[in-house]
Image (cartoon, rainbow, N blue to C red; front, side, top):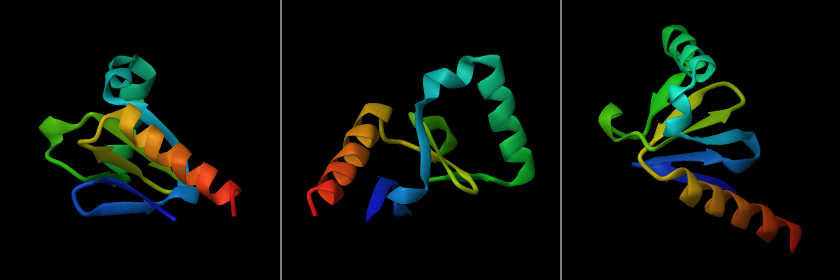
Length: 86
């Protein structure tokens, strides 16, 4: 199962470590994490940098998304519950 995070980008939902609102990037530690990730080449964007509403951390990279954090979390949880029903 995959999670659509905007644009033409989908990621395997099992690789998702966390989904965060872009507002949290105001925190110093988060800003430093994103800066280091960018410098190391781990940032991949599903949108224009000015339209980022959330970021998703997966096993080996960080994705920037134009979709709201709450919407992505709802999609992610619906995938989890649909698998549990199988």
